[in-house]
Length: 190
Image (cartoon, rainbow, N blue to C red):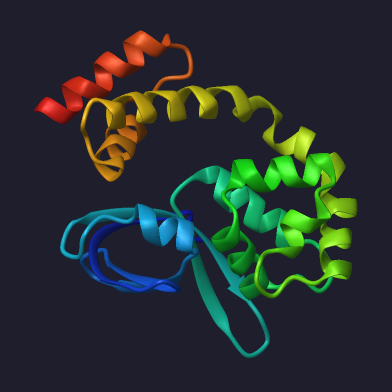
C-alpha cells in the first residue's frame, strides 16, 4: 500500500490535491483541515495516505497528520460511514475537537457537521467512545505541547502555516516546551 506521498503540489482544492512525485502524479482526496495545512502550489507537500479499494473504484485519501489518518480509519469502520462522510467529518472538526465531542457524548456538536444526522451522530459516539482511549491515548499530551509551540510562534508574529511547518519538522515529545520553541525558531530563521 501507499503509506505517504511526498512531492511537488500541482493542484489543491477543498476536496482533493494533486502531488507529483517525479514519475507519477497522485490525485488524493483530502479534508478541509488538510487543505488548510497544505503549502502553496509549486512547493513540496507531504501527505499520509490510505487507499480505498471498492468494486468500482480505487481512491487515495491523504492526511497531514497520522492522527487524522487514524481517525479516518476509525470512522470508516463504522457501518454506514463511508470515506466521503469521514472526510466531511474531518472537514467539520479537527481531531482534538472531535475526540472531545465523542468522549463527552456531545451529540449536538457532531450533528452540527454537515451531512451528519442525529442517528449517525449517536452511532459514532456509541462505537468510538471506547476506541479513542486505545488509539489516541499516548499521543494526546505531545500534540497539546506542539500546539502550544505553534501558538507561541504565532504570538511572535509568524504565520500559522509557517509555525505549523516549523513545529512539524522540529518537534520532539521528549523535549521541553522551551527546547521545542528554540528548535522551531531556528528552523524559521534559517
